[in-house]
Length: 539
Image (cartoon, rainbow, N blue to C red; front, top):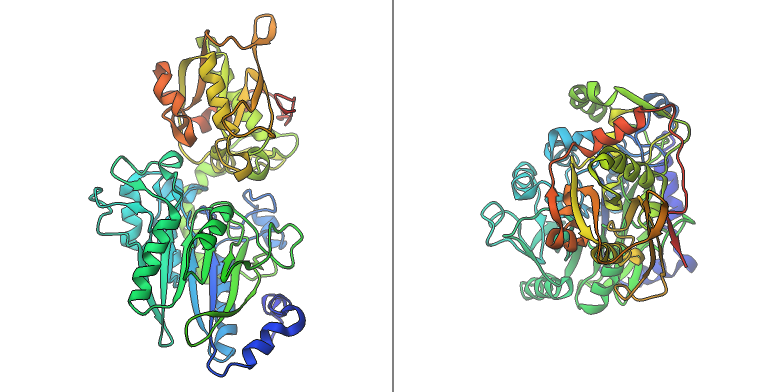
């Protein structure tokens, strides 16, 4: 048998401390075993990515320096299924924790069609709806639902008033494997109406109550093995586990959390146990395939849950059939993404773990580009939500494809006027969910601000704001109107910026596309020098 790096890694991952799980299993004669393979927050990373989560060159991929991509994921899934089959013919569920949409040109060009095709080829069993599945409204989500061969679930949303979705997305489903019935429940962020564009006909509700309702319905139907597919974040998953009864496993997403027993960068153990519920999540972008082995007793209670995410690095061979198909799908994109628009003197940091909690290089670049474009229109301040920043850019030539990977949402510049008092309200919103690494964190230009993370959210975290003027930076005036530029999504209230939607004056949402503005700004001079200048500080 040829050497398999995945299989070798798997042996290390599944050794439980002290052999407790093995002795417990051996003492029960009717144990039933299931492997749960899972992905989350894939974000249209159809092709391999670099260690910075940015596009990876063909040369680096050939050298084994890239991660992920559908072709490697296919190999990893096939290998995991083979291992499970060899191990007493264990059954396998392959599920996804949401956010397949948005993040590369493949989504910009094809919307959900590529994700549907490849997920079908990998034989996924189920998926929950992520907030980004609503980025282009119910119509694109419905087209995706119609293309896939598996159920897409969402328990905490009322879609009955939306004709496109009313008959398309169940709250839960039952899947039979090896004669056993497994109940699967979907969960979506309660604030999806702030994060995406579900439309006025879709409403979202409390996750704990929604999950418990479905658990009760499933158990009444005799289903005792229950798995929640939750695109709600690690913290919410723990709250759901603590606040419900009858949930065996939560497969998470949304917070891009790496849970692991072997990786020093992990945010917690794999699985994280809350009572009798096992919580798992496998970072994002196809860098890992989660692999959890669960042993149930005859009553459907968990006896053990062991495993670890498998890293999908250069040691995992790319499946040739998927490589060929991805190459074919990429042909219409090549002219767009290979066009060199500028160069960078150093890598431009756009990692979400940085940009969603503090000033970052990519945030400064984007905010500066926005302000530069419209400053001659009397605009003084720029604000960009960090959730709209989706990647870093490597040093050297910068292609339009890289810019579009950073800014895939096709937003336009939006200009308006807003009082100083409302600007403070906006900044307070921006720093209100830093602990959750939320996308509303503001990257700014034309102003500096200081905030205090020790204060409660919404209770004066922003302690100082200075605005740049003809004579330099001066304290913000609460009753003065300032010219502001943002993107159209934020201006309309996205990411919790309701104050923009409600109080903005002289609004114009139809400026040039944000990606083109950033590309032009990069191209205006010599190689761009990434920088931090202290425009956002804590006290």
